[in-house]
Amino acid sequence: MAYVVTDPCINCKHTNCAAVCPVDAFREGPNFLAIDPLECIDCDACVAECPEEAIYPDDEVPMEWVDYIELNERLADEWHDCVINQSKEALPEVDKWSGVENKREQLIENWK
Image (cartoon, rainbow, N blue to C red; front, side, top):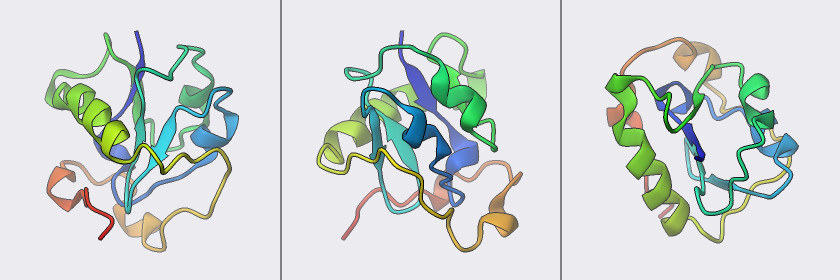
């Protein structure tokens, strides 16, 4: 089992979760974080740190976000060199996007 970052993270990108990860499983994209399922050791430390409540064990991801399991795997692979293991400021418009539902179309997958 690995943990999965889901829809509420998009356009918020708090990084408290990445700072507590003991194995550097988080990858950073432009407006989203992903967890590398091959690095994740299922420690659960990140869940309590996410103010958006966006992180779930892969077997507990809500049905509307089940595609985020594959998305995390794919983005973690694409963003392999973008390890994040420290806290940064959330995105500038975090207050606008926090709590907004169905943000998938806002996801920016490419850095360039």
